[in-house]
Image 1 (tube, helix red, strand yellow):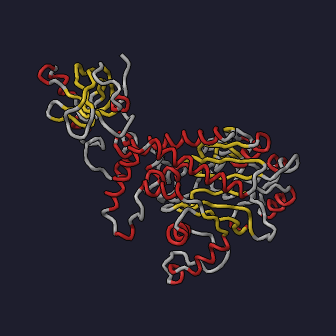
Image 2 (cartoon, helix red, strand yellow):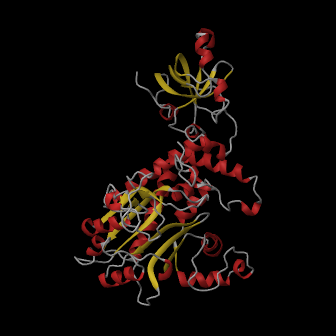
Image 3 (cartoon, helix red, strand yellow):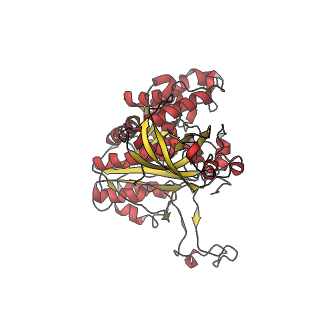
Length: 480
């Protein structure tokens, strides 16, 4: 007989039929009632055992955490809070779980801190919280591909190992095949990369953008969705050393078109989970409400989780120039009363999360797209405006999180791009392939980057980015 899932059985279409289901025991009470879950839904299904006619050896092995297979019939439930249950004919123990060992783990049914769950990241997906988060992550991932496929984009796999630094930040993980106890040196006493695997210095990528740009200038509309890496020593709730990036690039598209694309894309993927993940969203919303009860009122979220999603979906994103935003922030009460940790004093300041959230949550009360940033605080590849002080950059700001998207119209003019690279000491020979795209049929083009974990963080209401990726990689932590 073919296995059914809990999700399928709870739909009730197999009522009064013989069924088979496999899963993990979440709870077992009165030697009779098994709460079984298989990960397909946040909900368990109750399996009712005829304990008087079941082998006692089997009953003793039905413990929290055990994997079992149940054969029986699906019937309407007489119990409170459930529509259907399985009347058990036979139970097979697939994988036992010693109760004494379970007590040492997060499988023990009690409230565990998120920190404790991180210590047992290989088991945390068996909890309701992480089951819900990871199902939502999976649905969001599908929605990303679905949106781009429907809108004529081609999926491009850009290199994970690269010789270029797209951001110019220099905070990259080196890739080497050298024996680190006996690294070959050249005549200058520096590492001889000619003797290394690739014959040159290479790193893990911080972005697939530059490569995606070259493919957009042949395929028209492309996107990447893959792992990226930052060797930034930031031990915060917003940073990971390994994370996933969504990076579309579009030929013949200016900054206005880029902003339109980003807003449409975000609304599509969030609407998708609102339409398909209500059970998990409801659970996560209630979890967040319980968690916030212990916080002072001023630190609590102004909106419930699903309200926050509806807030983004219902509002047009307000488009504001960086210059206008600076003026608003300089005149704001938190700035005048020095409540901001970073006081805005003059044009050219790099905005912090507190400033971004003020604009979204207090001033405009809707998602905000800031554009035309000072050239000095943005990357070399962003198109220089006619004022020669600002670039065609844009950031999308969300409630509770600040910046969620960063993008720009790319500098398509060969001479301007070359001049900016010289100014910033960027190796033109190393990026000659990138410059070539400005020599052979250059055109206006744009794109953006969205850190997938930031999106999952927003969609789930979780407060630490380490809790929205299966195995977080952070400074001093590469466990599992």
